Length: 302
Image (tube, one colour):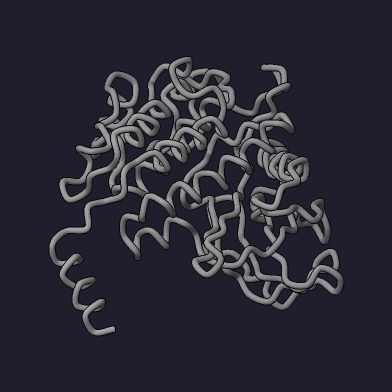
């Protein structure tokens, strides 16, 4: 049964203009606030309001997001309960999801990929500095504005406080959280992970943006689960037959995709720096005879 559309209502001072998205636990509205202007307004589904665990998870996301202040992270304005509804008010980020953009545009140029990776690494580093491990980094949780080429990180719904004692976690040992295509292998057991799990997810996103493919080819969740645990990722230069990348860039991405966390770069910023350095050191691409002929014609005509 579809849930009630709250568009037109004013909740906690936010005028809900239109519903722009929905998931299993919450709905998102474009809203207007007299001081903050356009906002994203997330509302926990009413059927979950009586579930203490669902409420705690929802408020935990709000609390974690409010602890991270960085231009590359969607800002949390406020959160709480009003009119019997649990809500989270967020900065309205321009652009669509990175997933939507790449699906439409196809594999991106390495220079753009490295720029996006560096922005995301800076945002994740701010989260890690605040003691927050994202754990669900994926293109759907990243907004991208093609005009400015800027990205913003959002959705701390399954983030974890690095300082939180095990007894206060909201997941059980043996159950992983995250999105299988982007989750780090060590997270599959449900054990505590550190910032290196976000490195793996960031490397997977970089790989996908460059090639349009994922590092593992499993067609079912079961097959993909096994591959993540037991097989190394397909090398970057074998992912898409029509694309070739500098060996140093391949090495940087593949290091981020190591199954053993200790063999990855030590931090997300180190991963981004490796990728940027590899690209900067690469020789310029060969122009080919056609490009040389066109340049010659232009020079002759000037």
